[in-house]
Length: 481
Ligand SMILES: Nc1ncnc2c1ncn2[C@@H]1O[C@H](COP(=O)(O)OP(=O)(O)O)[C@@H](O)[C@H]1O
Ligand SMILES: [Mg+2]
Image 1 (cartoon, rainbow, N blue to C red):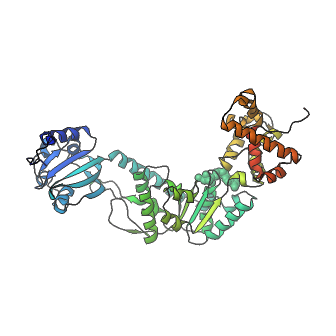
Image 2: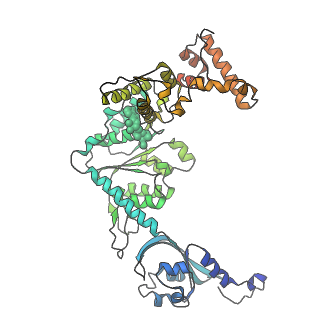
Image 3: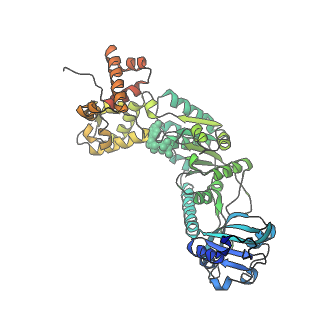
């Protein structure tokens, strides 16, 4: 930097130093540049402020004179000058010269000029508010975990396999697999759409495992990367701050079960760190050099098909194979034969039990709608809809009027309206396809006396799919017209 240019191109007349200073003042990050003798040549206000200094106290002075607590070995800038190599970004927490605790993410790079080291620069990102939030979050997560160890038998508060209501052969098979896995040590991977009962299965596995440790749960989609990392791995906040070091959930789950929900939302770096912990049975807290032993069973869950998540690069293949010793696929409610009726009965019973005088039931129309609906929110959605309807219903019968707006709108009767003249005038591909589909379905239904099971078989689709399509297209058997 600052060399008299042998190269006479016009850019050499450019005021580089002023430019650098102006850029330094404009950016949010701290910028600190030293020359090869360790003298500060650029230090913007943010960099000085992070250290609790004024720019003029730093500028033009030797780094080690300004910061007597640093040595040639501990200073990242001087290390970069000495080695000529960049230093990967790392997080540091310290008390600055004004007594303020700051947490900074530093990246340090050597400045090379004509193949020689001319100096080094450091970029500092102030993450103090985030670090404080992490600290608060981790203590909350911990408090929640220690609640479990309170009075009584914590296992009682978890769902057991017997609480999972189903007669679907596919779900029963999944439960059997989970039961067998529970008593072993192997990881389990559960996938299913939202509301299919993943959490139920995880709790049942933990309860049946008889593990002495806790069940610790974390939704990987709920936190930004740095928070998720310190929550899982724990933090060592540096000896100056007086803040307590904290174990992460990986340590708190020791001898217990760690449930990582929405695993595919975990950033890839963290996924590989997690894999390392599982392979070594050691965890290293953020900012720490010490390794601490931990073993736990991981149960991961995912809303998305894990194989698709691998394809799209969201889920690391190596981690998935490590975690999927037992792979449990919870099929959606619309693919569980008989479960809609069984679960509706179960939830209505529960509602009826709450008030002695009530004997709630569904009207036939509501029942029709339920059967043709696709239940994207699965069992959770059914549960909520029934709770809503129970509140909205005036008598003992749940009618279309007692249902939430969005669901009532999915009813065939309301869907028939757009099939009027407006729809006929449409010339879009969508409209043409729907006309074709309607014709084919109606014809097939006619040909087998409106027996939906038979029609579905002839059309080569599951009955639920046919009923769903019929509802979407407003196809009903004409009566007495
Ligand atoms: N098979 C089932 N039997 C009884 N209740 C169920 C069943 N599956 C789900 N539920 C209910 O649905 C809710 C949501 O299930 P949950 O396990 O949280 O779903 P997920 O984690 O897959 O989104 C549960 O709290 C429970 O009340
Ligand atoms: Mg869940």
